[in-house]
Length: 130
Image (cartoon, rainbow, N blue to C red):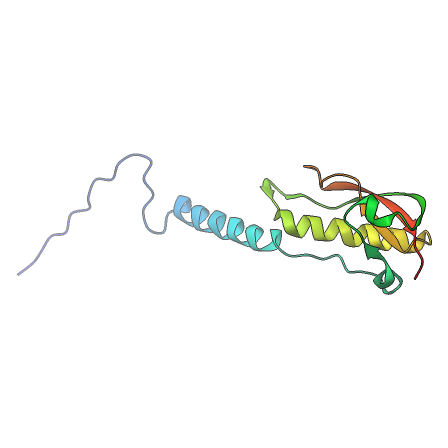
């Protein structure tokens, strides 16, 4: 006894198993998932000399300090067309600001606003008594 299996008609634009469209979709999904994971990772370390730089929340908290300048820090806020995790971006920008402050001789930083869409934030730098 023989059975004849007739291929089903497929609708136009629908990929079949093994077609190039299906593989591309899987690769694209993998790429997007990979970028999402990478978007949450941080690659910015605090330099050894910046470990002693303190972060205060407001300028009022630095009233016993001498202001010595301003630093501007920026990190990558997007990877491709995906936005990176806001907390990760904020942590990286703060680490970069601490590194810059240490190089300028400051031992304290205070944020001057929020991290913008481009991953930038300005910080006031201070020398505070130990």
